[in-house]
Structure formats: structure tokens, C-alpha cells
Amino acid sequence: QVQLVESGGGLVQAGGSLRLSCAPSGRTFGSYTMGWFRRAPRKEREFVAAISWSGGNIGYADSVKGRFTISRANAKNTVYLQMNSLKPEDTAVYYCAADREGRSWPPTREYDYDYWGQGTQVTVSS
Image 1 (cartoon, one colour):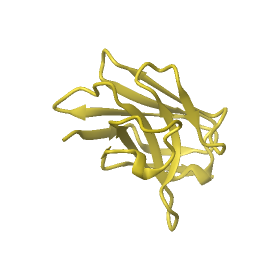
Image 2 (cartoon, rainbow, N blue to C red):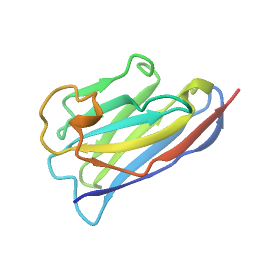
Image 3 (cartoon, rainbow, N blue to C red):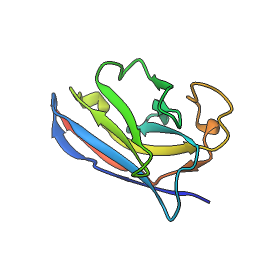
């Protein structure tokens, strides 16, 4: 079992930036593909971004392309989501997830992932 811990959420004004981090508790990521999802108030959880173990494959939701950047530092056992030009509609709880099997690319569906974090709140004020 892998426990994922997100950090870096908070309150920011529209146009601002935040960087989220995700690290496993007690073990390494191994060769897992990692992803970020988000759940806005009264909406379903949706895919945001994913990155393969090597970092050679990266995918984004259309809504965040050009504004968000996913990266990973395997030596630090950490995955990041740099969020720039934030908009009020980016307000959501952001979740980190790990895909152990690498069954498909890009892994945009919740059931592609085996482990999830508890989430970190991001609030963007207008």
C-alpha cells in the first residue's frame, strides 16, 4: 500500500501561482506513472495532468494546458504541479494519484490509478 501526501495548497488571487507537491509516505514511487486530479465544488473529480516514470510522457487536460506544468524528481521521490495564471475556476481540492500498472496512456480516468492522496485545497479569489 502506498500513501500519498499532497502539500502546497492555499489561497491565491487570480493570476497568481502555486506549486503543489506529492510524496509517498514510507516508500518510493517505484516506476509508477503519477497524476493529478481535482474536484471542484458540486462537480465530479476530473483529470488535470499525468507524467510517466521517466518523465518522457506528459499529458494535460485542455483546461490547464499552457498554465500548469507537471514534473517529478525521482531522486527526491516527489511529483510537482506548478500552477500559473490561476483562475477562480481552478478552485478545487487537488489530488495526487499513482498508477502502478501503466495500463494506458494518458491515464485520464480515476480507475487508471491505484493509490490516492487525501487532497489539498486550492482556492483562487477573483
